[in-house]
Image (cartoon, rainbow, N blue to C red; front, side):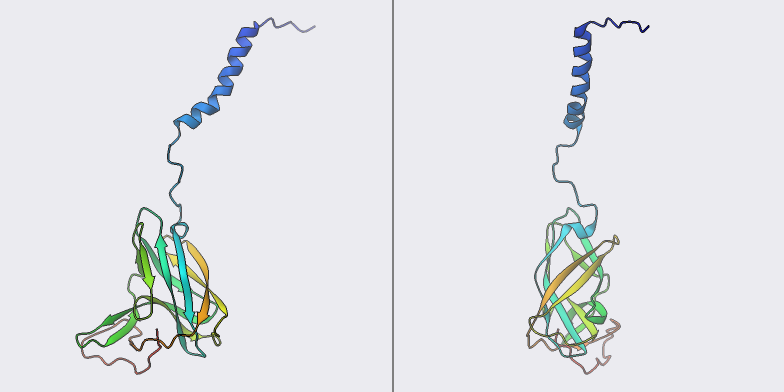
Length: 188
């Protein structure tokens, strides 16, 4: 035979109330910030107005407005796309005579905290080198950006006609005074 438990009903109610209150106490003690910080750099970045210059072969470039919603500056260190054998992050700089030269951007693209970075013709851009085929107006191409924390984000950009800027290209980023630049102008 089992013994009969003669616990007073008020003791049961107090125990049940304590158990029910525990989750509320945990919630009350948690942070009041309802918007957690992004765990990955890629989660804080958005892109708008993205597009790629139409090209039959050789080179092209991608542009757009990268925005960082996070509390710290973030760095894009590389990019890839199935449209091109090689993709580089480029900048355009002017020498003393005003001649513009395009070159790989050392250190990548830094997007300031709560700020934006414009990727534009004649400025910072994503360079496609060794196109795998023509980039036709109206088509779309994916581009994947890699950040310094190892995270990635992929966006799709529409291909558009653009006559392009005309800069010289310094492939290794070596821009010594008086060094001749290659003759081709990719139009980024």
